[in-house]
Amino acid sequence: MTTTGIQFETVPHWIDGAPADSAAAEQVEIVDPATGHAVRTVGLGGADLVDKAVASARNAAESWASTPTPARATILLAFRSLLLEHSEEIASIITAEQGKTLADARGEVARSVEAVEVAASAVQQLKGEYAEQVANGVDTYSFRQPLGVCAGITPFNFPVMVPVSMFAAAIACGNSFVLKPSERVPSASVRMAQLLAEAGLPAGVFNVVHGGVDAVNALIDHPDVAAVSFVGSTPVAREIYRRSAEAGKKVQALGGANNHLVVMPDADLDAAADALVSAAFGAAGQRCMAVPVAVVVGDVADQVVAKTAQRAEAFTTGPGNAEGSDMGPLISEAALERVRSALDTAGSQGGTVVVDGRAIDSRGEGHFVGPSLVDHVQVDSDLYQDEIFGPVLSVVRVDDLDEALRVVNASPYGNGASIFTSSGAASRHFAHHVQAGSVGVNVPIPVPISWFGFGGWGDSRFGDDGLNYDAYRFYTRSKVVTQRWTEPSRGVTPNFVAAGSQ
Image (cartoon, rainbow, N blue to C red; front, side):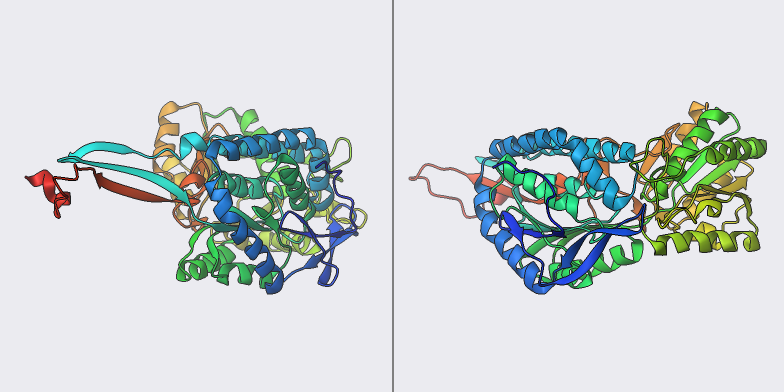
């Protein structure tokens, strides 16, 4: 089947390999953040729609689990080719609903393609182990099997990359999947469902249900959902982890972040300033691996602030699809108000607003605010403690690397941390002692390539396994077989497991 892209005014659900009408459900406008105007609508499903999607996934699960792993990989590779073929179209969908620049959106699609490539290596990743003669005539081997129906609950900031990092691995492992994307950015998920069908994925293996809290609760509570993956805020991640675990499901819940970038006195300060503006203001700061905090060591702080301010003031903020835009709008009016409020209180709590992005927030009807830089931020201030999730960079000044580490490690979050330095000893000390799941050395946003695992520490992750390469363990369970074959005339020794002691 050949698909022609998003051709609907109301975004449908996708159940059992086909669009499912959502006209009867509660309708919510999908707003272009660059204009504040609705581009289409989506109907929010509840428990009834979740039941239909899970039933479809359950019916498809056994057959899909029995499909040879190389055959699953072939379909995923066909999906990869379609992602590449339609990359510009998908990037445009991301920009229209999420607001990020087309360059950022293209980068998101590229990382999604990489995640599919890793998933297609499932034959290698799902291999078990074999131990011969662990006792007299006894061998032991292990292998991994799929869980059944898995669910993904994904955020607005990466409407393609985060879902793909979940469902590609889950499907490669032999599971079926129900995706509940953010209702703010639903179209990309349906477009990917169309492309998966075109790639040859059987009906029911991948389903999409749009909805709010009711749909999330229905997925968590559904007895046929074996595993739940979530990316979002820490309070919600903690609650989803608790409820899913109590229900006996496997669960990975990735929460918020307050990532730090430490600038040492011996760093290339121009490179550090370049890194800070790209990491703090790229995608309008709306990514879990953004850098909202610069921890500057020693007497170079004034230079770092000046260089960063110069670059921040040169940033062009505008619609994501406009030529020359370095940064697009925030996702919503509420997000815009959160940034305004944070900057309103920064000065009263010891901070100095060096670059004030509020100066441009009246542009048209979109949700625009410019890059903001706040110096002399105190670690007990609201600006430092709260996850702003916007283009605001706080500068914390410290005397030495040990104090920098104390600042970073005192944060309850542990998603990522970076250091800029020319000292191998300092970078090694930092990498060894910092409490974060992803660490960068002269790299501002240390998101590893998909062939490595990804997930934070502390309040940034609840659950044992992360995404990317780690997902194979999450989306499967291990089975270990201990066996002995004997001649019929000899019989079987009842206590053969203890035979090694004979």
